[in-house]
Image (cartoon, rainbow, N blue to C red):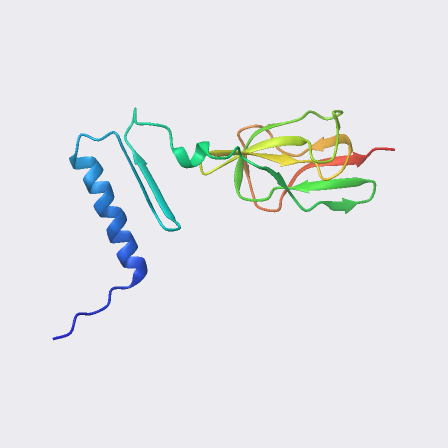
Length: 142
């Protein structure tokens, strides 16, 4: 009888379950494992902060702008929840954060693709945003 080779995805899931079981059955507050290019961090409530999140600040996301007449539309880069957006009439420069969205419990800033004035905001804080929907519009600086 030969041993069957386990599917790598199933093996990875089994390994993750074993790590979670170890954390839950021990008195440990957190478990951090790094091996090669794989890193896993598990923590209980009150455990340490995730060291993988603290490694680098969240990047400002540059979204592809869409020129519509005199305005440039800033689309939503993923399905997310709007945390905040700058108000209509705000002067912005290219690369400046104009909105913050929440994706999978992570906040990400959305950058202005051009310098100008925000002329329209199409969502309210707390609303669910669909991928590709218009977040806001910026009129180019004269």
